[in-house]
Image (cartoon, rainbow, N blue to C red; front, top):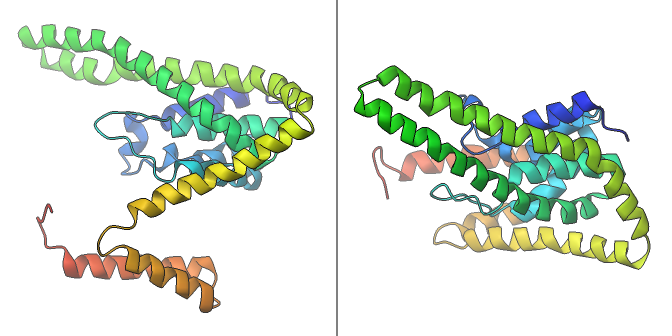
Length: 253
């Protein structure tokens, strides 16, 4: 599959919208676009196959199940992993498990982009301090939103666009050169990484009062014969009712 320049640009925009600190999507009350499952689907729509994009995104999502960015820290860039991992995987025709092995190092590269962007943003903080000293409230508001977002747009869209546009060919050549045992090794590694993500997520679920719900859900899924969709709906209803019954308004614990 050949990724056109306009498609590569839109893939870069998807990555930008999935960046932590981008307000345009979070204003709607969601950060889900940073998840590989979601931006993988969006990349699939751009490349003309949303189902395949969702499959790649779902596979890439698994190693990042326990991902969390605390205090502004971005240990791995899941948005870049999902967008570029899906785009390069679809363009090169590799299996989703191999795409996972591409996505994990890509996510680490994304942290470098994040650090570079935040370093440049320090300039706007100093400019806002000067505006505050001069009592220019409108200028503070401007510096707080537009220059950082323009910088993030450039630092996000340009590298993701170039990587998607020029990277598919080299990735396909590399995969072809690894055909045989090396590619099989990558496939095995790609199959292990989701298990690692699931294990990390299960470790977070062993807190007091949580593991019993996991066990209940497992047995319902195993023995009820219901598909995952009605089980998910029942789980959402139970979670809502349980939360309303146990968590008092204003309780911060």
